[in-house]
Structures are given as C-alpha cells and as structure tokens.
Image 1 (cartoon, rainbow, N blue to C red):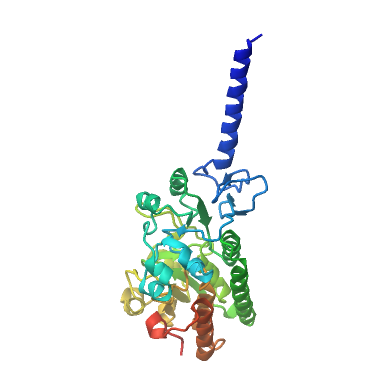
Image 2 (image 1 turned 135 degrees about the horizontal axis):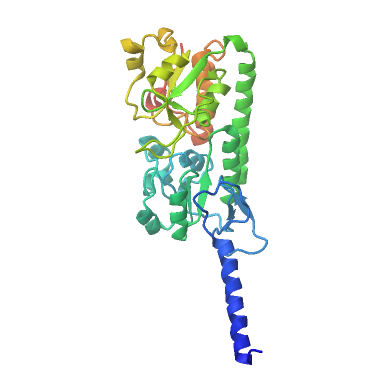
Length: 371
C-alpha cells in the first residue's frame, strides 16, 4: 500500500496526464500527410472551445471553431483567396494579402491598405508580426500549415478547382466569417449562369465539339485534369485533351497541377483550340504562337484558334467567382454563333456590377470578344 502522500501524488500525476492528452487532442497540429478527412482533429478558432461549439470543415477536413465575433482578421499569401474575400465583402477584415495589383487596389480600400506576408510562400516572421485571427492557405502546403499552427495562428485550408469545391469554399467562409447571406447570394448567382451555359452546350452535337487544352506560363505546360481550367474547358463545350494528365512537382517549382508535357506531346494531341492562361508572366504571346513557323502545323494555329484568357487585371481562370465568366467567354470564343458579342458583354457587365457595384472598360481590364 502506498502512503497517503504518495497516493495524492499519483492522483495529481494522473490528472495532469489526462489534461495533457485532452489538450493535445484539441489543439493538435495536422500532420504533413493529413488528407483523410479525420474529424477527430479540432483546430481552435478565436475564443475558448466548449463541448457544443459550432464549427466548419476546411478543405483538408479539419474542424475550425466558428468565432462568436464577426470582426475576424485575415492574412493570406495565396492569390486564390482574394476573389473570395472580395465577393463576400471581407476586404476590411484583411491585415495582409498576396494579390495587390492596380485592379484590386482600385476596387477595394481594404486590400489597398493591407500589408503582405509573402506571395505564394508565407513569410512566417511577417505573419507573426501581423498576428491575424486566421491564415487562409492552400491545401498542398502542409509544411507551412504546421509551421503557422506552431505560431498559434489558426489556418483555414482552401481548394477550389471545380464548381463543387468553389461552392464548398463559399459555404465554409460564409459560416466562419458570419456572412452566410452573401455567400448564398454568390452561390445562386454562379449556379444560375452555370445552368445557362450547360443549356447552351447541350445544343452542340458531340461530333462538332472542339478539342482543347489550357497552356500555362511556358510553352509545353498545360493545366492537368484536376485543375479548374480543365473543368472550364469541358463545361464550355469542348473536349479537354489534358483530362487524364496529372501535374506534379518539378525541381524549383511549388507543388502544382500544371503538367510539363513538352511541345512534342502537345503536337501529338492535335488540339483544335489552345487557351493560354491569363497570367501576366507568360514567356510567350498568342501572336508569337500564331506566327512561329515551328508551330504552324498545330491545328489550333492553322485555324487561328489560339486565345489568351482574360483579363489582364482580373483573371477569369483564377479559381473563384470569375471562372463562370471565364467559362462563358471560352464558349463564346469557340462557338461565337451561340453567344453574341452583345450577350457576352452584358454578362461581363453583370458580373462586375454584382461583384463591385460598377462596370469597367474592356481596354482597362484587358480582354477582347470574338467578332
């Protein structure tokens, strides 16, 4: 038998161990390979966790406690986050952001005033200095996610490579930031236009549909089958030739679904249409493709069907709300008889009014419509 004092020590040690295990289960970081939607992992939000707290699941399946306060400060180094923030009216919540082009600064005082925690890669020192309530980041960077969690900053993981994932992101952010009503309005706006596009595409006979690919920042790089750009091609009435191609890690590159297939394989694919991503850092131009003798044998070049996705300042193939307009523009570019210039322009104007309460000159945004 242990003496009374020893019994007390054992009881206290046992209690301490149980408390430590409980805290570990509540505050444990996600492991680098966590992608199994394990609902046992709970990441704290703002405030204390109680047994009946409300939560959302992020794109990695991690529970995040919904804060009671709606004034939740945000930081992100991920460009995809920006259109969601703008669409949901959260610009004033932003402390630091990735994408600070002239367009976003002109359209949002909150984003114009925001600082930076890096572009793509998170500057952990800067992030710690800003100390936001939440960092919104991409799912395929678990190392950074765990490093940020070690700083005591909650992380919301985001993935939006198809319409279902975009809708889930709007649901998640709507609930977490207490803007559910706006999230529902954005979803309804998108769904209405996706259905409209689908009805038009149904009228295109299968044998008359073009084949197409989306080219990345360099010649010979295409959007893989699990990227939003490939989803857009399919829903714009074309056959995506890269639907079975997977992207991967390339030395010197961040993890990416962009696939480095090379020009020889692209020639073998014989695409009827080539879309170039809207990135401003292309190492080629559409005109260079159309006038390069070495590329003159491509079907898309022969028939003058090489297009760069709009827009210079607001990328229509960036995962988010604008992908609906981007898909409609693809349909218009490939099959101009199905969506007229006037109809396309009206849709573009409606998008910008819905998002920003105003329209923009096409020369300023940087896009052209099929004649």
